[in-house]
Image 1 (cartoon, rainbow, N blue to C red):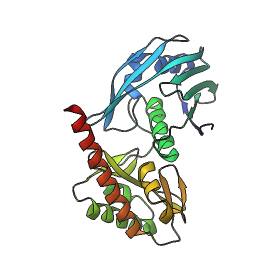
Image 2 (cartoon, rainbow, N blue to C red; image 1 turned 135 degrees about the vertical axis):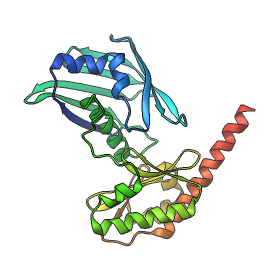
Image 3 (cartoon, helix red, strand yellow; image 1 turned 90 degrees about the vertical axis):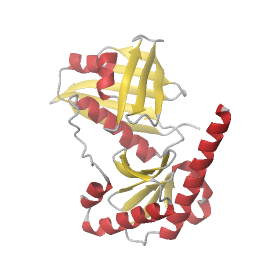
Image 4 (cartoon, one colour; image 1 turned 90 degrees about the horizontal axis):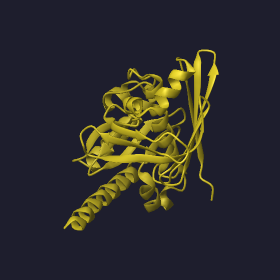
Length: 264
C-alpha cells in the first residue's frame, strides 16, 4: 500500500545560492532543523553526494527525548532538488525554484504510521518556517502555554477547548501541560494527547493506539491514523475523552515499566 504524501512549502527571501547552502550544510542545519522552541538540533553531519548519509540529532531541550533523523541522498540537482530516502525507507524530496520574492521551497514526504498526518504536516511546516526565518523569528504564530493558545481562539471555541483541557487534567492529574507542534498537549511518561482548534472541528490526537482501542465509540467521527475530529456543531464527548486519556496514561506507564525491565 502506498504511503500518503504530504506537501509543504514556503518562500525564502534570500538568493538561491544562499538558500541551497543553508539547506545542505550541517553548520546551518543545526540552526533550524526542529519543530518548536522546546527542541533543538545539537549536531548534524552530511556526506553531501548521492549515496551519502545525512544525520541530524533532534532532542527536547529538557533531555526527555531525542532521536537521530537520518537518510541517504538519492538525488541531488544543485539549486533545484535534494532527494533523500529516510532511515525507515520513506521518500523525502525538496525542490527549489526562483520566484518573485525569493526562492520557493517545496517539500514532499511520505507520511509515517505512528502519528496523525495533520500533526506531521504541522510539525514539518514549523521546521520549514524555522528554515525560512534563520534568526528564529517564526512566521507561524506560537504560544507560550495552553492559556495563551485558548485565549487566541474564537469565543465559541474557547469553552470547548477548556472543557477538553479540564477533562484531561482530571483524568491524568500528574500530567504536564505543554505546547508541542504548536498545539496544546499533555505529557506523562511521554506524550499523552494533543488537541487543537480548526475551522469546523476540534482535532484530538490520542496516537493510533487511542483510536484503535475505542474504534467502536469513535466510529461516528471522522478520523485519521491517531486523529479524531469533533465537529463544532456537536457536543464534545467528554466521557469518551476521559476514557481515552485514562487508557493512554495506563499505556505510557506500561511502556515505562517494560523499558525498566529490559535494562535489568
